[in-house]
Image (tube, rainbow, N blue to C red; front, side, top):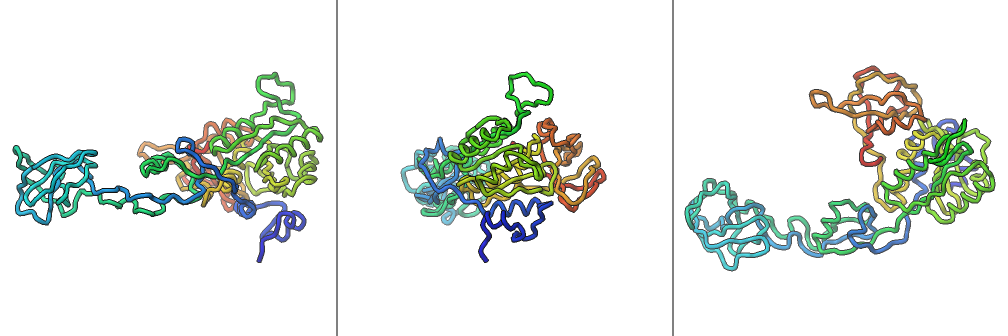
Length: 423
């Protein structure tokens, strides 16, 4: 069975399995978004210094065995375990990393060897220096190692031609070192995803200007800027746009013309008679959902021209929660990253009671900490209103309470999502 198009879903939402226009479950909304995502196709060649955080567009194959020669894993003495006649050996030289021993080691002979040095011809085992007694040019093995002990063999880490990193891998610091160790100076990566974003509302004022009664500073663009910066996308900040139909239309079409993704905050609440909603319906294929979650109930997703569109709520905390639960995963997928699951969760004890209504998923801001015994526990940051942005600054995790959970007593196990490293 072929999947329905966006236009089919918009004109006939009943064709979506388990669709409830009054309450879309969080996991179901993620799945619907996922099925319409495609990674960017264009690629570019980058030096290693410019490739951190980029997504590989090709498999990286090892050009050689790693290591490319047998070498010692420890400082000690190299000898042939098969020809060992006793516990004493004669030292005939030294092998350094980068300066091999020139010669062949015979029975009852050994070579002083340093970590990383090539194994001399005729040796197969290294006795670590802590297990050896030396007297002049003679050593006594206080403990005879097993044959081939403390040796790293050619190709033990990577075989020649082995796939080292697959296309779709997001490059991390360790990957840069790995590629450098293989002598690979440049890689092919997907181009940067272009993301345009703007805020909507007459009440928004730029920072640095005085506030009149009923006005607020436009904080959402700054949190969006920070979250998008962490993903390494190319950002197009279009500012805060007043509720003027012509200005909103111009900004929306301009954003869609130059970006792969357009993100707005405010103006998409289900049931509102809003200029933004009218424009989205006029120029795009956009679905307006009520998500069974708190904070972040209103969410819009669809396409404006060729650009994907995410309409986030206007409340500051709701913007961040919906970004992390829906937009982040979608952007990573569009960047070309393979296997982009939702942020991992694990269970810990909550030290305070929590009030919650069953039937929706809540993302409460939490502080993960260790008690006097070193056990990890969590507690809410305090008031959980969707306009209390300070709760996100205090938090280092989300306390994730799914739709089946109601009120909880202190001591209950709860699921948490770490925020450290993503916000």
